[in-house]
Structure formats: structure tokens, C-alpha cells
Length: 139
Image (cartoon, rainbow, N blue to C red; front, top):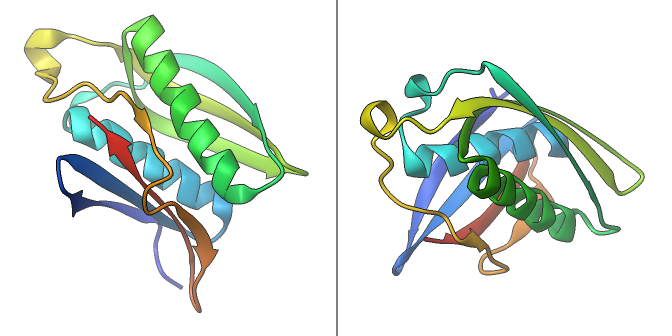
């Protein structure tokens, strides 16, 4: 069985993120790691503080965008980066725990500021072996 993982993909001036997992929740978690990976190296982000996030949407693709935008919002208002996630999806409701820390400019050296997740190349789908969650984020 494939291991959960994430990657970035090129898209003109913006950046695509893609998460893979055994179920949609794991794919969403991996995509969130890809999101942080745009800003800084994941190994630099301690998981010392927890934040709870809840989203509700009937369609998985819309839930994915809402999840990413809720996470980006938390990153902006709390001035935090996140490096660990635990997501549960049930009946169109996503509940998540996100662990991270306050941005330390010297240590994290943020590369970009993420403005939001978009519907460009949006997809949440199951392949033969795994789930994939992807979209382009505006930086």
C-alpha cells in the first residue's frame, strides 16, 4: 500500500500542492504539509502549540479548499506555521487538530506568504491505490 506523501507542482506564477493518502483525511493532512513546505522547511517547525479547525461542505473538493483556506487564515492571524495535523471527515464536516509554532523569521526564513487556496486544478479523487487532494495556491 502506498505511503502518505506530498509534493508541489508547477503552475505559472503560483504553486500547486498535492497530498496523497489512504483516505481523504490523510490526503488532506499531506496537502497541509505541502502548504507549510511552500513557506519553510517542515523540519524547522516545532509542533508545540495546537489549534482546532472545523469546516463544513457537502462536496469533498469544496471541503478541501475550505480546509486549506481555514489553515491559511490561522497561519495569518496567529502568525504560526504548522507541521503536524490530525483530520477527521464525517458527513461533510472536517474537524482538525493542527500543531505548530509561532513564526521565527530568523529560523524559519519564510520564502513566501500564501494568500489562499484556489479552484485551479482542484481535485479530490481516488486512484487505484490511494486518495489524492490537490489545488493551486495563490502566493
